[in-house]
Length: 212
Length: 183
Image (cartoon, rainbow over all chains, first blue to last red; front, side):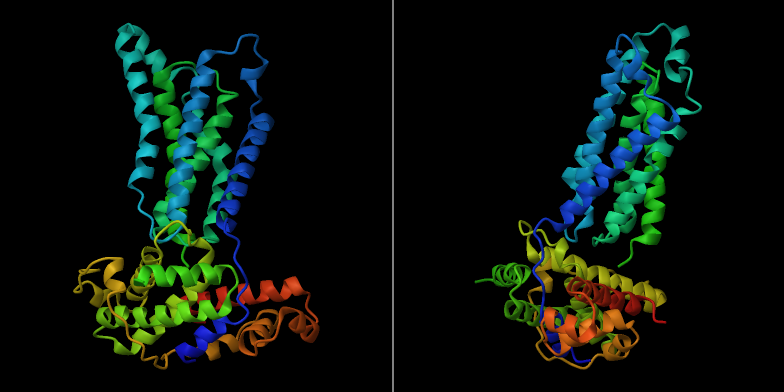
């Protein structure tokens, strides 16, 4: 086929494209991922934070951290979904929440008595916390990769990682409703580890699944 | 008007459903892409027209990812570069090691040159089109090649109107996938 014929073929009967078609696909994927993470949490673990008489202030801290990181992941993901975007500023938005949390955790660590520090770091659930967060992130990661398959990421591994970061942060937000831990050092290590797992998985899967 | 403004105006009209503007856009784009790939594929001149067609098909299939607020030239350049690197990986991975990737500039360089001499591609898209299933091939045949309306095509094929639209859309995506992984 000659190129002029291909051009004629592509242009003939070309349908209008909705301006926000791509954004709608990603909004749908993220909302569904968040709802599924919440449902899985309620089903598998139970929303402990809401059933207690006094809601711990650190519950809100965990939630704000997770949602702020989800917002950063969302911005990064949408920029990586379209060809030709720079991501420097989006990376700044991604780096900010964990840096603030790390500073907070370091302050708590330094002020604590040395024999208390290990308890602040490990709590009582450090073994299960990252894996529980990663488990809650599974549907959101699948939906994020589905949304990316309808887009044009020129950096498939990075785009997959963006989807994984968003999914992991949504999983962490859902897990905060169950999690009994209240120490900043615990959150800074084990929540971050739980979000890092789907981020890494997203990068590996993105490289394989997102060619176009 | 400079290249960016001209192409962007046509693209926005095309996204609103203006087929003649879309054809003008793709023609101008093809000329830029041809010059772009010709300079990158000095050792493989036969592959230039294949890559021009791959990139045009990708631009079409991914046109919903163009953000009207962003520069069009950067969007096209990123797609062309992605298709070029993809081609190098698939066909010339070893030789590519001796060729520095994108030694020259960015989007500006792509649009600094133009080559309007459309040639025959080495790979024949007609051949690939024939291999598509009927529910994709027939909508493309009637709507895209013969210029019939969606309604007429629906009547001729017995498909619903939305099935005709979906068939065209999926068929062109399947075409791009077959280019990547020849059966």
